[in-house]
Length: 331
Image (tube, rainbow, N blue to C red):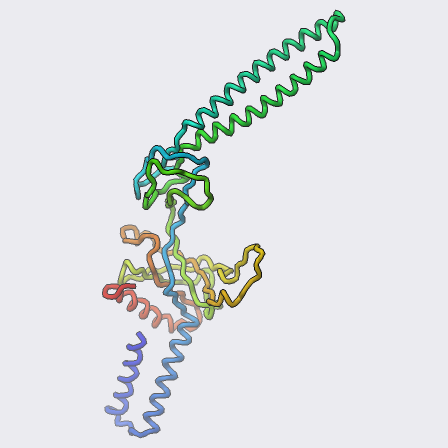
């Protein structure tokens, strides 16, 4: 587009000097060159400020790292890559054997505890009846009451342990957290599943609308606001521009975020300037229903502010010309 504007201005200069016979000397030629330079700089400076564009935009899908609640040997993998799944559908199975044994052990101990409580209750009742006939001491009755309390406390602890063991047994079957699908399945039977946070065995893609985020330079930040109209072009769909609008502007850069640590901040290690993350939504997402738009697709996003709207025409032309280039050039 820059070349087109430059060639248009050169054509006007040729028309002025050749057709209208404008005198050609060092003053007129220098003036024409200065005016052209000023016009080109003014157009592109104001366009970059008031009608900004981001060539660092991407289509994003939220993924969930699938980890197991328990560790163990994987015996079965039930799913295949990129196949639709429903919430609760089994993904893979961990060997149940040690967990079944734990449940059975605790269940047996709970039955023994119930039997002990029943025995102590009957003994306590018997000694209390004997106490009325003065054939039992209060010390013996107090001892039975203490043992009964301890047995009941033990039963409560066993019931909690049994519930935990049953939960762990159910967790050996790892299930889909929501509707969606798993992609790039590399999990196989015989592998070990571990309970390591954020280091999943599978990448689960949630069944929800894809999101479009664009990273803008800091200079036009004042002229990017919620609700402003925008246009999006995708590298996978050359020659098409889709109307959109700004719905979210992130108020923090990665360069401005810190986490608690024992180290001091070293600004010289984070010298890259941050960019403003802007989320846009398409006005008519149904237009992309049959289009190739996988998550990770690169895009260009232009935002049109109400200031100097005449420059938005130039921005729209440039955006479309760059989109058409994707027929020939990659990216």
